[in-house]
Structure formats: structure tokens, C-alpha cells
Image 1 (cartoon, rainbow, N blue to C red):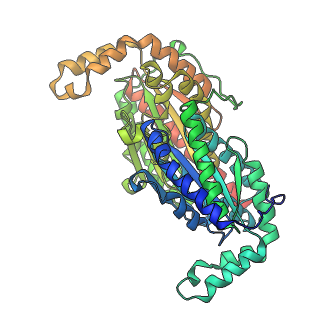
Image 2 (image 1 turned 30 degrees about the vertical axis):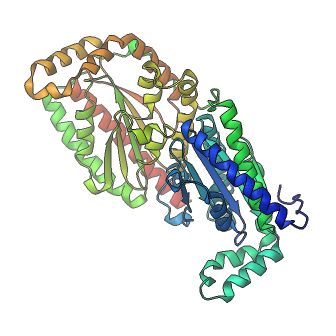
Image 3 (image 1 turned 120 degrees about the vertical axis):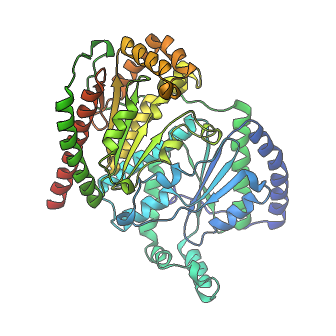
Length: 496
């Protein structure tokens, strides 16, 4: 890709200036139409140090209304200091519908530098290549226009530019030690960039620009940007077909087969609760020290007891080390992005616990049944969710998913109690009663969800909650067992 690049002939700057002027003038109505059709766009600009990435972005945004674009330069954090998953800085930055994000360097620069510094293993490198391809495909299939540019210069040109920057006090800071290292090891970086780009050329193709010819690079980038927008305006927002990948699945029972009779006496409950909460508090300290992130996901029937269950899990935790996120209907700025965005932005730092009261599984339940997304969207979501959760566990997170289960008669009794008890009436809404009328449809969707997303790395647990006391104790036991296993695995890795 880079090794076979053919450098452009000398520039005709007068002709190029005229081309650039026309392209800029024609870009404005395209961007207006893109905003009207609410098409989001992400432009990733990678390239050599001193190749002119910042200058090129400046030229591209010169005719764009600043209210409708954002430029982000993600920090390249050393692996030992990173507190979030590899793709976190990019997934949390994706733009809203009708807006453009320009990334000044991104996941490939991150990957290449960490690989060459030996901050990650060969296995981790290959894992991140797969994660990049998944991320780009998910954006594309979700209707994002994604464009990837690489600004290419040769070694001599890079050395010349770095020396010019170093000579002036006001620009010397721009020629870092890492940049000088890159020039010294140019061939090594060339091979690494080439391999990374070849391996991430699946869902979204790379375009290599001649960074030695400034006007040519501007013209070519504007052409690519205009053509990409034209194609989207002509064909409409893209909605990808379901993508099927085999994940190691756990066999799950259908809900109608689950025995909901288990119960617990008040005396046994109080004794077990005290013991288990004490142990969970100890484990919280341990996972904080070992920097193990934990993601607990709660779904369940209305009135099944999610809130009370969460309170018993959260009570023994240090409040500085956990968050509970109640997930309601998406806000406008959330609805205008990929559905996983609002969960990427709520992930815990390493060593912290995050509890989701409802989750990304709304995509294959309420959004599916209420028509808030297309059939392609929710059918595609099973695989996208499995990929998302796999990325979390590859980061090192413990991911546990609880379906808090009750039968229809128990739900009716609890609804009635809420309706007739003044201090509980805030818990019951007309929407709860409407959802109850669709019990059978929801049960069918839930069974499919459990069957298609209970993976070995992120399992579902059906928690029998006709007796809330039993449900709370069972959940605590599952959490404790998983955290003890994670701490032991961490210790074993340290001993290797």
C-alpha cells in the first residue's frame, strides 16, 4: 500500500488552485444536503510526523460551518497508564447525525507506535486489528460515512521538515523525540504502517495522499470528501445487513422452563446478606488495587426487583469506586449517534465497577418491539453486542449480565400493590401496563436475546425473583465468585 505508492509529478499550482476553488465552492451545498439528511461522517487522517496532517485538516474545514464539525487529536497514552479500552477515545468521540468529526491521527497510529515500543504483544496486536475492523464495520453499517486518509512523505522529506521545525524556538515543540525516532527508524515504521493498513482495509478502504505535494493533497482530499458525500446522498443512508460471527455460546433455558419457586427465609437472608456484602467489600478493594474493571448489566421484567437487587450489590462498595447508570429512553444527542455510543461513554475506568440498570439490550427488546429501529438494525445488533462485550473482556473487564425474572402473576400482584400504595405509585406508569399487554412478544424477544448473546466471556444469568430475597443472595454469590476468579487469574498471570 505505502511501499508501492507512486509519487505525483511536479505540481501545476495555478491549475490546482483553480480546481481547489471549484471543489470548495461545490462542497458547501453537499454539506447542507448532508446535514438535512442527518448523515454523520468521520474522517480519519493518519500519516507521518510532519507530513502536514494539521494543515490539511485546516484546509478541509475552511468552508465548513464550525457548528457542524469537530476536530479531535486523541492523546497517545502509554499502555501502562491507559484506564480504558483501546477504542474508547474514538468510540466516545463519534459525531452526531449531520455532523463531521475529523480525527487528527487515530487507531492506526496508536496501534503502530504501541506495537513498535513493545507495549503490546503480537497477540494483542492481532486482537486490536480485529477490533478496528469491527468498529469500522459497525459505524459503516449504522449509517456513518467513514473516510480514511494517510498522508505520505518519504524519509528525506520528513527529515527536512523536522529539522526546519527544530530550528525555530516557536515550532521546536512540534518535533518530538518520538517524531525523530520515527525518522531514524523510517523503514521499520513504513513496514508497520503498511501491514496495519493492509489489515484494516476491509469495511472502509484507505486512501493514500502525496504529502510532498501540498496542493495536490488538498485537491485529492476534497475530491474524496465530495465523492463520498455524493455517493451517500445518491443512495441514502446505508443500513448494513446482519453480520454473523460464531461466538462460544452457553446453552440457555427458555424463560417458561425456569423454576421460580426458590425462596429464602428472613433469618437466612439476613445472615447471608451480611456475610456476602462483607466479602464483596473486600473484593472491591482487591480489584481496585489490581485495576480490574467490572461491568454488571441488569435487565428484567418491570417490577421484577432490579432496583432492590442493585442496592444490595452496591451497598458494600466504596462510593468512590463505582457508578450506577439508570438507562432510560435516549436523549436527542444520544439518539443522534450509534446506539452503543452512550454505553461507551459510561464505561468504568480500570479498577472501578459500573452497574447498568438496563443496557444496550434495549436494541433487541423495546426498540425491536416498539419499532424504534429497523429490522436490519436489531438483527445486526446481536453480533455487534457480542463484539462489544468481547472487546470489554479482552480489555480485562469482568462482564456479568442478569435477567431478573418473575412470572406474569407476580408482576400483576406487584403492579397492583404499587397502584394502591401512595408512596409506591411513582414506580408504576401507563407504559408499564402497556408493556404488560405485550408479555408474550417480549418473552419471545428475550428468549432470542438470551440464546444469541450468552457467550462464555459475557454470560447471562437468569435470576429467579419471585422471592426478592433469594434473587439478591443469588446475584451476590455470582458476582463474588466471578470477582474471586478474576483476582486469582490476575495473580496467576503475575506469577508467570
